Image 1 (cartoon, one colour):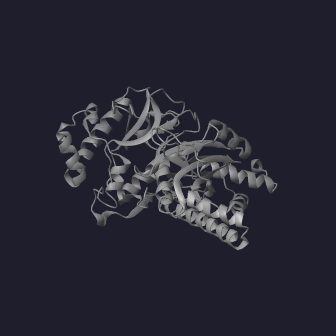
Image 2: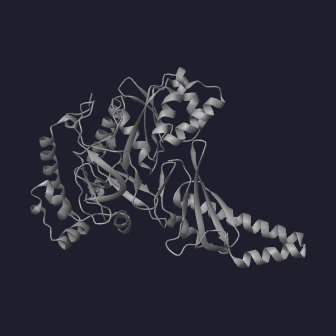
Image 3: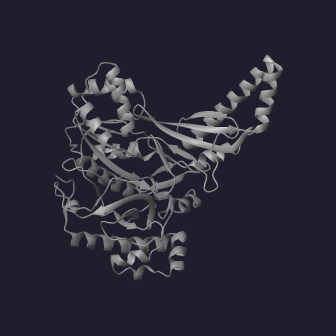
Length: 447
């Protein structure tokens, strides 16, 4: 059963809804936001030119870099005094992507997350353990809002505290979970070590996302916990989680809340709009947001759209689970970052060379990152001379200097990117060189 009528309307009625909202959105940003007014003028498009949904392709694209360049509030369209909540992602040089929400935006977020929760089978009878992180990350509060909207009880425990998570599942009678898949798998492993049989608990369903996960991981989660595992997709720039969601009846694609988020698939190289069913880059125009509406935001996520009927009865267009990205962004434990963020930290350090490799592996169920960084020739020559001279004091001093470098780099990465990584200093020439684009990431996670 769907949460709202809009999830089951005819294709014709949905297109009418989308066109009316699209025309209103274009007029709104043109009249209120100087950035978009200039972009539309440069493209030779006026609000009155949007007479059909085919005219949407005349609108200019918006990129993540343009949002960063307008940090912090220049892309806000609503007046500052109407913004009631902020969220943000990490930025390439410490400056985050900032998103502002009006009260109406929070109501929209509540609505789409209620649809996602309902899609996963969550009702007012459930106790939902919310393991997504709270704070500037959108996952925690997004799931929180949706849970409350459907009338379920929420346990706002956030991430971490693995043994406490298990204790609350047992003691509070948790029936539904919202989490990143990798953290939940970690919880399963710890629980097994504690002798906990999750299948004997009251758990029955869950809503998982914020990172890529495979069908094999879904099967593992369902077998270990005895639940139905549903996928959810979102972007902080758009609203947060709730852009699309799987239904528990089918779980073969994610329903896009297209009455709020107008989707297109484009060729990532040419920008040409592709027909429904073709694989390409997902582009979304927000047609309900007040605080920071975006025109044709390039998500960089690769997927395809489908209008095939669904067993759940929803008529919303579906998107496939993501098959990749058009850029080099990494998603680790729900945190998005780019290799360039690591590079900016390394280049500010003395004694290390600008050659590095980010190694990503799945250890157990958790994604782990090891940043390998070459030291300079001068550092190696000095250390080798101390070893040859047999100077114990100098050798210990060299070791301490290396340890301090590792600690500072690791601390800076945690501060800027938001995740804990391992840092390994390696000899000069260790990192492979390339005549073309340097390989900065060695992603060894199973596909």
